[in-house]
Length: 402
Image (tube, rainbow, N blue to C red; front, side, top):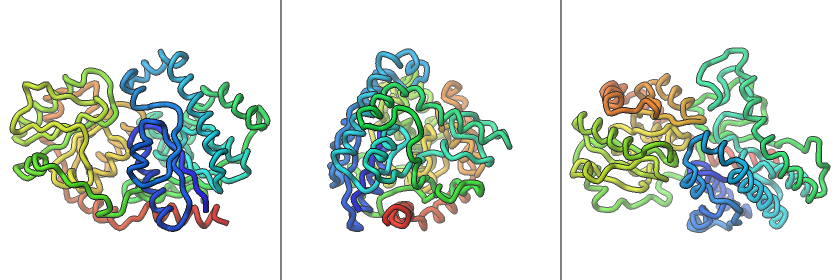
């Protein structure tokens, strides 16, 4: 089968697609991965055929930050033009490759249009539970409160987000020879790359929506070799990992100072990971017990830490639970409060500390009230038995391979 995988965003949006594409390629399928320019080299390094799409999300975050207010202020001048170019380039890439199936991130709003033009099925990848309605919980990122019977209504907010780009999508429809208005075929399948150990599948989801488990490389595949300094640091005492991924919002240096103070006060050592700028440790606070890195391989590092302080992104949440390490979530926005509350409810983390309330004292309290790691270690053992890529590929082959 000829497959095209299309995604955009941060590493958490790209790496799962790479893992599934590599599994599909190893199973004999012909694959191409379409990503924005900032991740073309990353995909090529994984040994995959790649198509570059317009747009650069890392540059956008660097210039605008992760603030929703900043995004609204720059919507007309920055966000909308970038998305218009991105959506058009995604449709062009699909028509150029002519796959048998399009597997796409929700951000790729033009993928269903390209699939309709080509007369092929498309498969939606629900990276976080925000699209398929359920009564069991509200759409991640809309509200942190369980609204019971009203939970399904929260999914309408997410469904309406595409209306912000109705103009560019109408133009793409016209260029593709599709009716400017009206429905196009929906996804043949919706795949949710979330661990059922972490979030059991809601019973009221339709059969076409499947929780598969996280999409990861096989254990031991491409395992990173840690540099000598990092390896020695992890082996020299109790280490707390801290990193906020792509969350470049607010005063990253103040956050770094608060995290360093809290970890030092707990008598532990700090591995601070700066990511896209979400965390900076002032130079005068770096010492023998504080090591700073721009990025580290979660699989090799987290299992050697006693706790992980992170923003609660879906990828990092899975990595922490898979490593059997307890967490302190510092949610910033979107789906992060959902995951932070879930980890705490399951006994995998201390109570979340929202980023706007982050201080050395509050983080110190959280580090002092970490749960017993037994529960998260049991979850790690269960997750180790999951094969998310295998489950997803089997679903693709069974439903659209015909």
